[in-house]
Length: 447
Image 1 (cartoon, helix red, strand yellow):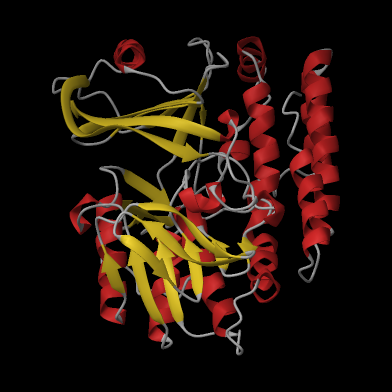
Image 2 (image 1 turned 90 degrees about the horizontal axis):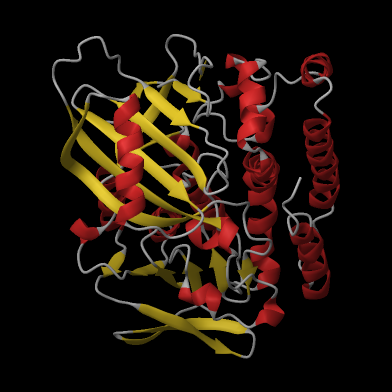
C-alpha cells in the first residue's frame, strides 16, 4: 500500500484529517463538488464547543470566542413562563460564520500541502472485491490507498457501498431534518426588546424546532422539519414569529436556504477496507442541537491518529476499527443516548408540553447544557436519583407521561448494555450482528 489519501468532500472532519495527515507526510487530495472555495459553507452562524480546535490539534481562529449565549425555551401556551438557561460568568463558546470557519480550515490544509480539486461531483466508490480503492466523479476516476468519506448527509459513496459491508446506505425520513435559516433586519423603535435566543417547542408532530434569535442588528429565524417544505410554510411561520417578535423586519440580510441535516446517532459502522466515514456522512451531529461541527472535527483528528499508527499502511476495516471504537467511546455512545432523549422529546404532544411547562416539570438547570457539553454525562449530570424522584412526583397521576418516561429509561438501559458490547476488534460477522442490535433499539421511536 501507500500514502495516497482521498478525501471525498470538503467536510469539517475530512479537512481536519487532511490537515494532520498531510503534515505527517501523506499525499492528500480533497475532491469537492463546489466550484470554488467561496461556495463552501452556508451563510449561517454557529455556536460550538470552545475546546474543539485545541482538542483536535488545530490552530485556533483569531476570532470566534464569545460569552455563552443563554437560550429561553417557550412552550405552546404563551401564558406559561419560558424556561431560561443560566451560565456562570466567564464561560465562553465558539461563535463563527460557517464561511469564516471554512476559510480558516481551508487556509490550514493549504498551508499543510493538501491539494483541493473543486467542481468535482462524486458519483460512487470504486471497489475491487470488498475494498474501496477510489471514487468515480464528474472529472473521471481517481484511485487511492484510502478513501475518507466526508461527502455529507446524502453521501453517494455510503449510498453505493455493498450492503454486505454492514454500513447503512440510506437514512430514514425521521433521521434527517430540513432546516430553513434566515437573518432578517431588526426594526428600530423597540428599545425595550432584549437580545434573546428564543426556542419554541410546539408539539405539533411536524416541526422539530423553531427559534428566533434577536441580536443587535438582526433576527435569526430557524424552521426545522422532518419533511421538505416550501415558501408557503416559511411565510406561515414568519407570521407566527412576527406576532411574538414585532421587531422582526422583512428584509433578508443573510441566509434563506433550506438545508438537509442528519439528526440522529452516528451510523453503526464507520469503516470498511479502504474506507472511513466522518462528519455528516457518518451522522455525527449532536442529535438535539443539530450541529456536527465539534464532533466532526474531533472525529477527523481521531481518524488521522489511527491512520498514522497503521505502520503497514493496510487501511483495512481491521486496522481502521480502532477509529470506530475510539470515536464511540469518546463521542458516539453519548450521542446515541442523546438521540434516545431526542426521541422522547419529540414524542411529547402539545398537551404534554403544556403539562411540563405549566407544572414546572422542567427547570432552568435541566436545560442549561451548552455547546461545551457534548456528552450525555455532561448534559444530564445533575439528574440524581433524588431529582428524578422529585420530577416523577410532579408528573403524578399523568399516567401517559409516566409510561413515556419509563419507556425511555428502559431503552437507555438497554442501549448502555449494547454499546458496552461493541466488538473490540473487527470481524465482519460480529460487527454486523452488533450493528443490527444497535439499530434495532431505535427502530421503533414511539414512546
